[in-house]
Length: 482
Image (cartoon, rainbow, N blue to C red; front, side, top):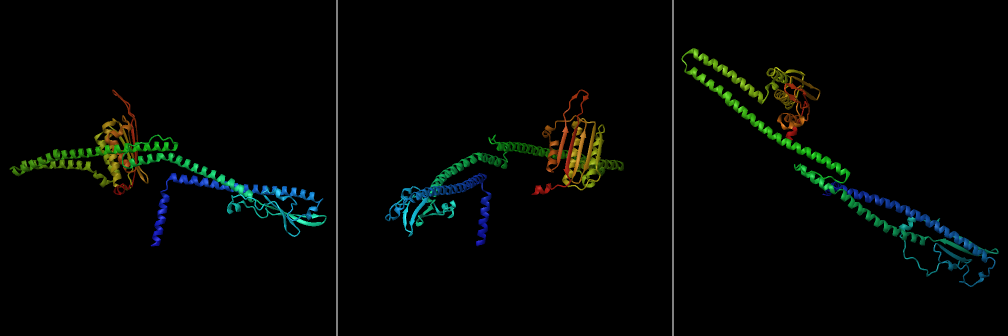
């Protein structure tokens, strides 16, 4: 039971770390940098204070020694004071009680303290630095070593003068100054963090607006647009987002329109098939029924033979009609002969119907195995291009080139007709449907054309070139099923 709890806790901590906002990360980063700078500054302050205290104490000790040496020299000419009563002032050290950095003591030959500059009732500063601060000052015992002056008069040792450095007062002053500085640093630290917090919060305030706009896109509403942000970086994000939303909205509207057109065309195709079946095949069946009845009711063999011939002729016409309908539904030649021969058959039939147009084509004969959807797409695209050329191009010459490489099959259809405006191709289903087919297979399609004018008999042929590249193998069915 303990191990799963530990794993769960670690997972939660990782999730909390991953979900930490960028604003909080920036605030923590800036706070850490400020703390690092304050720590480095504190180290330098303590180091400089330690050197200043050491120099101050040494300077005071040297000055005191100099003065005491002069005092000793003064008393060397009259040493009657040696016999003075105990407790009498010899060096008048009590007058030096304001020298807080030094402790000056005079001991006689018996080691008794005769005089000192420290008063027993002398007030001590109530501010005592903490021990860690005193240790941080790094004032070693070597630096604070006491100095001794032996007092010798006429070859007689009368005592010794001991000067002991005492940096405690100076350390207390440094501590008081440091505390004041820490208060100022704390106020500065809090003020900077508050300023950074609100600055970062103001900077990231548009992120909520961007998130709302992305939510609208996720829900399929592409009409929302981002405003022109003041921040330069967010301006670029807003512009790219608005361009993406425009493209998505346009693509969605085009898809909806194409879907409606496809449905309408499907219904039109079904209507045409129903009319053909009713008008053509129904008429043929009626004729067969009449001739069959004539055979059954006829008494002469010659009349029966004529009716049988009529039935045979009508049957052939019905077979042609059924073949044409099946060809419209699904070109059987693709399944029977493959793409190369199917395209060749399609071009041959078109050229038979449009003998005034000079058509030149090249199709590689060994096109490798293709996905079924790629083959039917290539076939339908060429069929649509030829239909458009026959209806709208007024062309005299057509060139068709079908090639392949290891991964793709390429189609290029070029004519010398009147051309058109490619930007308006989405208004009709033909070219727009071709583009949707190609994009659905992750292929490429480009159209080069220009609108030309016809004045009387004079026609300016600008021509059109359509280039299409389709992948030989595609996982479109897997993507749709997934």
